[in-house]
View 1 (cartoon, one colour):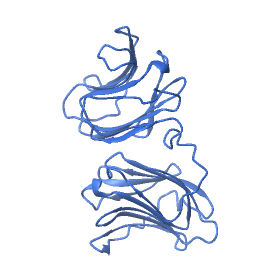
View 2 (cartoon, helix red, strand yellow):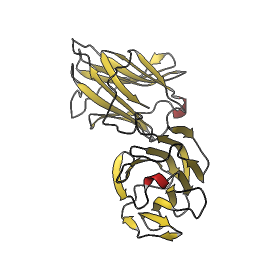
View 3 (cartoon, helix red, strand yellow):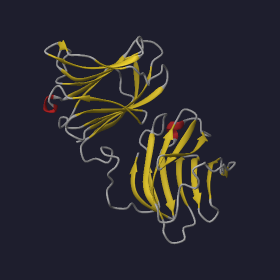
View 4 (cartoon, helix red, strand yellow):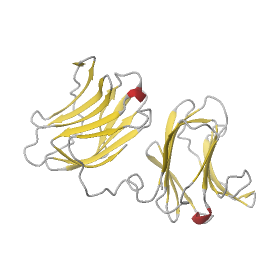
Length: 294
């Protein structure tokens, strides 16, 4: 069973894992570091009491400029594992993903692999997640084994109907990532488009055009199209007839960043000031859509 998404929960925050923690459980934490305070913690615990065992303690420390990982058992801390790197910055948003495997906890920060922490306490004892410290939470979610977020390299075989429309629960915010996996139509495709929409129009229009060999980016505001952006990336068109692709749209503070098959394609500066009003994803055109992660 999954939990969430939960938007803007108060800190300190604590929740049970509905079916415990298993191989493939993923925890997603999106937040922002406060302007003051020395540290924050993400703890996988064996109960909700303050002195209950902690199987995995993840603690970025701003007073020392590193991240501490540890385990507390019978009210005694074990040997610290220190990562002498701090990928968090005060007053800046972040996204942490923690994937649980049979061997360890795999942590990524802002979509970059950060560290692994091997189990010292058996997974069957872990039942609670707790977050506290100098952080505000934007978004929290637990994805259970078998859900679409657990293993981003495995996608369901069924295709989505085109045109495709999906609600973006809670709208967009910095560090939010949309992943689209599909394939370009094989028989003389002309174009396809991905639109991020809101009640007043289209905040971001991404439109590969094969008959023109270009990728058009634009917005549709106040009932009219804005200025097209046409600059091509150094990696080229990035899409080809009949070929599959994985596209990431990353919402950042000042722009949308688009990656295709791991290559950076473009940035598109925000033309809509309030990102959370962008609440709809639309995909249409000469494309076979195989998987969407919002």
